Amino acid sequence: MAPEFEHAVLRALRDIPPGRVSTYGTLAALAGYPRHARHVGALLGRLPAELALPWFRVVGSGGRIARPGSEDADYQRLLLQQDGIELDGKGRVDLFRYGWPPQHFLR
DNA sequence: CTATTGACGGGGT
DNA sequence: CACCCCGCCAATA
Image (cartoon, rainbow, N blue to C red):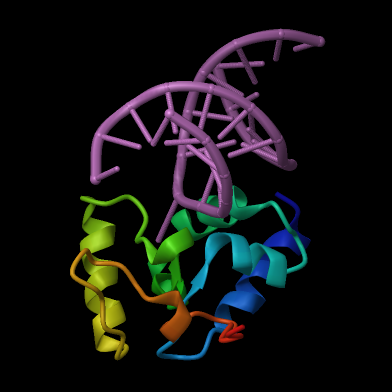
């Protein structure tokens, strides 16, 4: 992918406030690349751990953690909880409550 | 050139 | 919930 894409996505990623989570699709859009959700996932997947970026604040649509069953998924649940985020019984994040950016437009 | 492959997203049954 | 199907788009085979 173009370096510009990666830079824009990482910038949007760093801008997710602690205690909030965004989604692959939303992050792509925020970065200026709508419809590139899959590419955001691919990028996060190959981020060197030493960069210490908040990759764990990104989940799939519906607040689902990616690749259920994987070690990354378990680790992500832990990091999210340490971030002050409560997961529901099925291990999902309530995006209406923690989603970034906020979208609490009722009626 | 076509086919396949994804840390994806929606919609339908 | 389980599947199934389609759209998406860059990289790879």
